[in-house]
Image: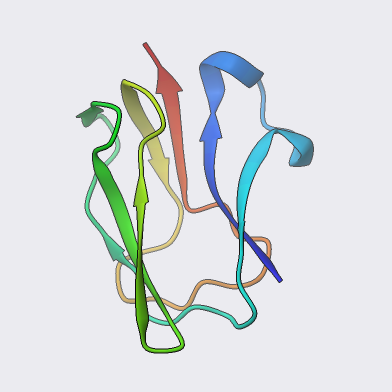
Length: 91
């Protein structure tokens, strides 16, 4: 299973499925901890969210400096296969 977690709007323009960065997981993810809100500036390496999969925490970090544009899953909700969690625009 792939869970989509970031969309870099500056590099890719309008959202298309091929533009989403993915991290492979075997199960749906319960209870993500979202560390950012729309409008937040982020630096490369900033923690964006923490996903718990099979009792292990996976920290999702910003690949580049940018601005968070959207957060699609509320904190504590289940993340379904193919869900895009956070959209951001690179500086």
